[in-house]
Amino acid sequence: MRKLVLLSVLVFCPAGLAVAQQAATMNQGQMDALDRNKDGAVDRSEYEAFMTTAFANLDKNKDGNLTPDETKQALNAQQFAATDANSDGKITRAEFLDRVMADFKTADRSGDGNLK
Image 1: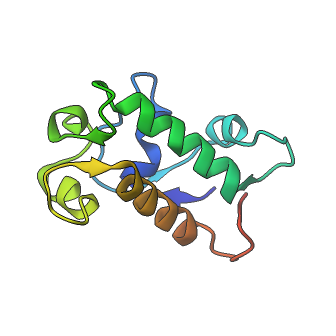
Image 2: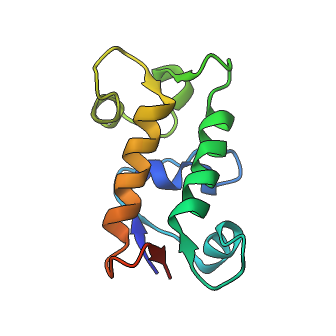
C-alpha cells in the first residue's frame, strides 16, 4: 500500500471528499479502481487522469477553480493555503494537479512511476 496525502484521497470516499488531516492509505479497492489497464499498478497517467476528473467533481460551480467553500469538508485553512500556490484564495486545476502529482511522486518510493 502507498500513503498519499489528503488531496490525493479527496475522491475516494463516496461523497467525493474525505475529512482527514494526515496521510491516508489507499486500499486495494481504490487502487483497483484507478488501475485502468489492470496491470496491478497505478501509473502516473492513470493517476493524473483520475485526479483531473476529481477536480471537475469538486468544482461544484464549474468555474475552473476550487474555493474554500467547495473544499471545506476536506481541507482546513492551512491545507487550502498550502495548495493555493499563488495565494489568490482559490485553487486552480494546475495548482491541484501540481499538489496531487507531487503526492504521487512521494508515494512512488521505488521511483518507477507506479504505485503498487
